[in-house]
Amino acid sequence: MRTIREDAAAGVGAGVWRAPGRVNVIGEHTDYNDGFVLPIALPHAARATVRARQDGVLSLYSEQGQGPAVELDVRTLTPGGVDGWARYPAAVVWALREAGYPVGGADVHIDSDVPTGAGLSSSAAIECVVAAAFNDLHGLGLDRPELARLAQYAENAFVGVPCGIMDQMASVCARRGAALFLDTRDLSSRHVPFDIESAGLRLLVIDTRMKHDLADGEYAKLRAACARGCGLLGLPSLRDLDPRDLPAALARLPRDLVPLVRHVVSENTRVEQAVALLDAGEPRALGPVLTAGHLSLRDDYGVSCSATDLAVDAAVEAGALGARMTGGGFGGSVLALVDTGTALTVAGAVKRAFRRAGRRIPRIFAASASAGARRIT
Ligand code: GLA
Image (cartoon, rainbow, N blue to C red; front, top):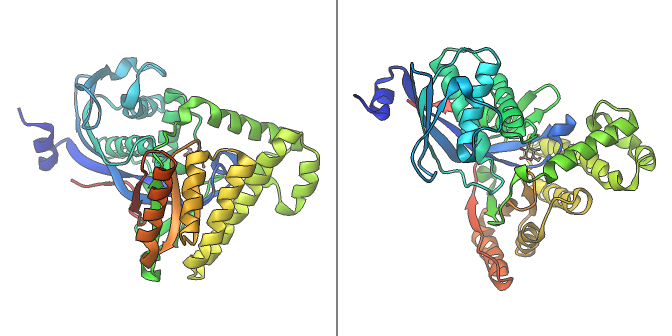
């Protein structure tokens, strides 16, 4: 019998796909409020070698997982019924079947270099690579936003995490050299030039190694609080609150909701500012917008933590043009926009600050805007 890799190379009922992780340049916690986001895809990606099977068995193996393949029957997949990393591919197959696509079993071999628990969307990368693979293998004809919606639904309904749509849209729709300006209300999007390297800049990703986990409930509470704010203001979503009406709206809200609503409205404005700067060919001017976004996440939205604050402060002090936490928060990664010539100085200063504080030394790399999900073989 041929191995899955040999079948993939021969292209018969098998192939290899890749889908990247992401960082969000600006627009945090706006997606579940129907707002704007501006992510880029990372060069890091999940690769999946997938071969269709006729016996209804979904065999899931991860190079990074501990232990043997997880074997599931596609007909009995149940939300909440799978643990660990295997939840994500299983969720997608379940969601496809729920949506009425007659997909069967498969051998799925995953190899990912997206850091996990770092707020870089390693789980969305796995979901999206499996969605893309099944779409192609079974000729389902789903377009990219449909694949993203399906992956998000899989995570919401099968894994039980009420995430928004940003990570999945970035993973399937991003383009090399561009940031994805996405309106999460209708999924309309535009690729905005993000060739910062040509402008003499680098975007450093600082993984603080402080584990970030959306499944721990804080994210769901924030989402629910935003929904409560909408209800009290009589709006379909916080996206519909015009910045000019913000002071009057805040005066009508209970105290605990005021900073949350203020963050969402100001963050949407920051996305528009960032897009205008990129369109105008002024990526250097993004720095202060990023730092303002961090202060809003720290002081208003309350999702930063001592590790992300330390990384931002150390980076800015060492000469970064701007820095902010990225992703859901409560740990995870920080972005720092730097002049190419100061990248090493900034990285070194951040590491020293962590060492002095007795913390684990962060992993730091420069990210360039990369391509979204695609078939490789
Ligand atoms: C996580 C979620 C996204 C988004 C961000 C916060 O990454 O998966 O949908 O809400 O948090 O911006």
